[in-house]
Length: 440
Ligand code: BGC
Image (cartoon, rainbow, N blue to C red):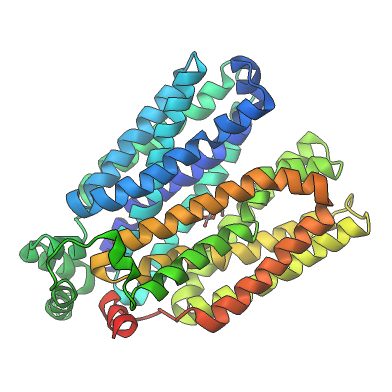
């Protein structure tokens, strides 16, 4: 039973791997596509962020299509889009084709960013749900690490090196597509489509013969209102607070600065005077720290709960950022300590906000409204991600590292206080028990 659930989660998490790979791969290609397409700095900025516009559209499409056609079929569509995007961007001879291919990739990232965690949360038994949804985050960070490594290995492969870097993504896309044939549809979606017999069969395989019938009953209960849900249902008095919690957590996950490091690490290291070679090694150290501490989080999340991890993680991130800020103020940025604080910050994020925010977002909403609630929440996450990504280089230049990292430290403190005061603990309960608790 456990093996079967893990297999399902691993397959769905391949969506997360492609999400991580596709967002990070671009960093290694920048120096080559800029001269090839003759891009100004501003055009480069737009080219890099083109993916993001696709993401936002993808989240909305996935929310709607996932309810209509099922989580699994839409994930298959995402796999196809990843494949087309890999081939299209790798073979583009004109900027317009490159942009179209990246936007299609963005659509797929958007779809995967909502459907992978949703699908896992809907299939996982309550006891392991935190760890299993975190598997998606593990896949994201492995995807990022693979992109860093493969870019590094391919950089000397000639004038078409950037094409090879982008083409690599086709392989996991094919793997995701075919492995989706091995897994069942979400039982919660099946019940919503009145396919209860199939749902029961899946539940028997995932939660066991004894508990399956009662779980089916609970799911039926929560889906009793048969009319189609609409987005404005999210504003109903009992749902609105959940929506706020989701949105605020998603925004905090981004505005505490993780992607300033993920996307700009080489720039930060170069800024403090490191050579290209060490900058690359340091980037790989970041990728590895990310993976190791995500694994640690997975082992802890169902035992210690999401809330405690979020609180401790925010505190740790704050201290690391204060340290980094102090180094900038004292003009001591040339030593090993910059790396120590950055790795410490990544470790704290990976063991807390990284996985736990995705887990909580997938758990908060009632069955009827899950995809709509997740759509709105995750779209805000992507918007916050873009804003930070666009403003960080300007902040670093205009405000200096000292003030910039101090601001992020203050935001971590705000996150800590918010979680402590407002975020409910969700560990160990079924999605239906949570629904009962939140909407009673
Ligand atoms: C975040 C991404 C981030 C990644 C890095 C994810 O949870 O949503 O924005 O790049 O973690 O570890």
